Image (cartoon, rainbow, N blue to C red; front, top):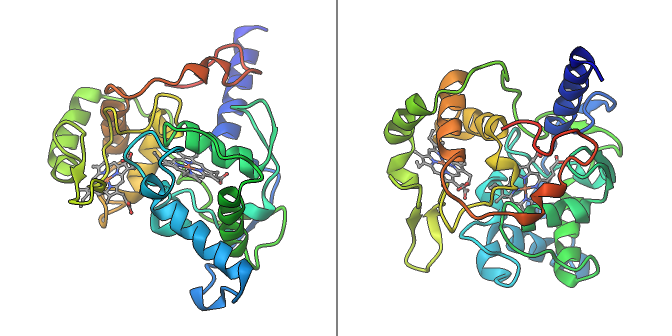
Length: 272
Ligand code: HEC
Ligand code: HEC
């Protein structure tokens, strides 16, 4: 492949990696169902159990979580916040092709990806009651979203990937805008129960190097729209890229299976 072809190919794969299948699918609004619509009986109990597992993951699933996070540390407000990778509509979006895996994957596989990477832990068995409860919650969250469509706000806000990162400036953004909650050493702020009020962004209790949040522009897109918490959208895109360049490069748990990522691309990591 010559350089230009390789570059075009790489960019196409990058676009696919950060915005799953958006090009092919119709975009619809993001309806969040009312809690009162959770049915009574075993199905409703599963939906509620699923929500509890996703919001209190570290405590509820200690054998599957290897850090200090809950799923909702990133998927804000129980997976209902647009541009914080919401779970609304995912029941009809998967199975889906993912470039990181190089194949079509199920929603269960995608969930386990986050258990192994974002939570630095272990996968759930596909037929376990815990996995079924998580699937039940995501299915209920997808009420009214037509199969094969994407909700507006799926994934993260687009970020200009031509912005050049400056981690030195990023450190000063971090100190001024993030350290009050996430700690000067990225260690987070603990609560008396042993969990975190403000989760760590690096160190042993953080996501591992194979996580989506460890990728500079993914982290920048999350931060730009959602952080500082309660003041999302206040950072410039450049400041978001700079602060992401700083915190993604700090020490965090390793992920050995990362060498198998992006099997269809010439290099394993398509972007830093
Ligand atoms: C450290 C932040 C973080 C945590 C914690 C986290 N995730 Fe994720 N999750 C992400 C990112 C980032 C993406 C998008 C990754 C990408 O673009 O490659 C994502 C994507 C997903 C998706 C696919 C969304 C879509 O639109 O296709 C699902 C499902 C998901 N996560 C479930 C979970 C579950 C379940 C947990 C807890 C076991 C969890 N996540 C914990 C960061 C996180
Ligand atoms: C007011 C406190 C506060 C400030 C300031 C703040 N955050 Fe957060 N941040 C949070 C909370 C709380 C969560 C988890 C949300 C939840 O559990 O509902 C979070 C989640 C995160 C996450 C995903 C979870 C993790 O720990 O990896 C990242 C990354 C992050 N913040 C980065 C930043 C960056 C970068 C800044 C500065 C630009 C920042 N935050 C400023 C409170 C804050």
